[in-house]
Length: 254
Ligand code: AMP
Image (cartoon, rainbow, N blue to C red; front, top):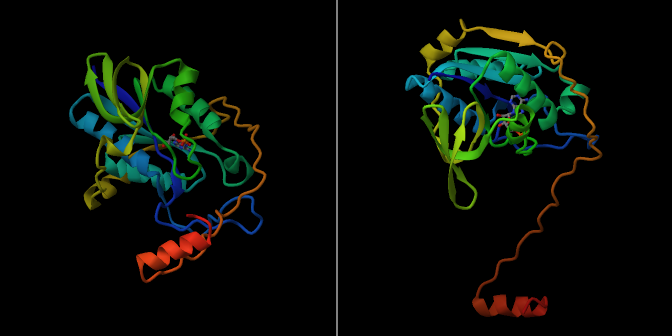
């Protein structure tokens, strides 16, 4: 059985960028800041492409929900090997800032139905909001089984065998259709090569809105304040163990 695989690829601030809080303390600075595909989504995409290479998947569809620039993230997915893309556009601004796992999972569930997907592969977490909820909520909307934090995925006829990590290993068998979320150890994602980047330009990206999918993206979550973590106080250097013990005694730590 060759699977139709939907992969969620979110555009997030690049992991190497130092995040700055906006002066109005209502979010973080995004203008002029490098964005990339969420690292866990690169892993989910790599897994989908490997399934295709093993002829276990018939089609890999990259989905991104977000502003216009999310198309760049989809292009990267296409260059990694996705067959086509779906961009659900949520213009930058109020709606996008309020977009969270509940809204994205509703969109993913609708697309899974319209695309007749057998497998939804997502990252275990997006590194911007750190929610770790979208996969679980998507499975709930669809009433599909889920394998979260996957470190190994094997397709066996109409089932998936998923090994999960959370301190230890748990290997589970789930029936398809299913939702799987990727952990760091699942694979090492490939870089898109220049010929594949060129080829990706010819692949199709369908554009739609949440309204087209009849998904209500209203949020009942309100951000009150965004703050930097407290600044760590400078440490002190000591010359010897005796001095260290003395200082600890002085400060009441010993
Ligand atoms: P989260 O629950 O926000 O930590 O996200 C978990 C996973 O859901 C991500 O790694 C993505 O695979 C997927 N996801 C979340 N938001 C989006 C989005 N806006 N567009 C595409 N995929 C998303």
